[in-house]
Image (tube, one colour):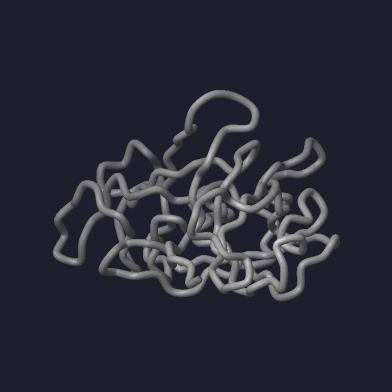
Length: 203
């Protein structure tokens, strides 16, 4: 059975509280690469964010849409499912700046997510080795038509070493065949932005 391709990292539930926590972040001006719904994001040194890459240890959240951005024509637009690459603005990188590129995101700490796996498993037993196997994510290039991320979990070499995600289990549903690519796993983040008291920026 072929699995539906959804793409991106999708919120499932809050493991430490109630409801979906939603925050906002300013994206770096003139940043390279679109930011799609379902993309992981990380902070950079000026307090703005960019798309995280597989293996990064400072992911702060998952993009769930755009609040605002200034287009190439100078018009500030509201909403949208992805932030176009190279979006520029003037002024401070602040949520108070009416020109700033701002996205909405779900913080990853204490949350459970669903993600497509890029490698099929031979048996369901292998896929449900929960709380043991870790995997990194691979961002890829999302769709400007749907606004959805192409981020998947790189399940080619699951193991117990350091990696972005901890596999919590197999997502429920009639069309989730672990013996086919793009099966859906439930995961939580092992590696995320969590500055300690002895660091200056945590980045």
